[in-house]
Length: 140
Image 1: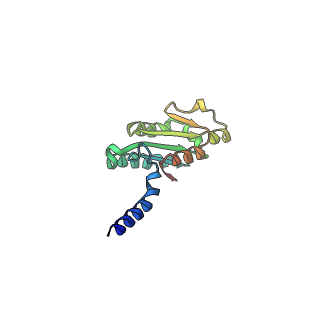
Image 2: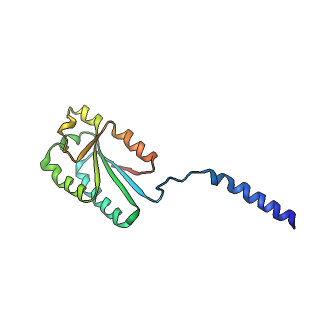
């Protein structure tokens, strides 16, 4: 009987040993989101999704970031088009970013961006970096 108990303990220890080595992120229960979009008209439904996720996640809701890339970047400097989105984003704690590579391609100076919008050097790279940190990501 002792032999069987020793064997069972040894098997259990062997099977669970690999699991104890894995590291759990410090904020593993916080849910962070990143969305990459090429169309500013998608900002309204994206921000509404952020609002719903914040309500659904409750205290586990972390950060919600949106990166704007591509030709639509030319619309971002037009305050008449951006004002409603900027207001919605601020109200729902959504951080807006533009892709620096897109700014260069379409010859837009970062200083021409509204103050609420951050510039990241490379939108795709930033998206991948955030995914490695555990952000849930979607590209539209």
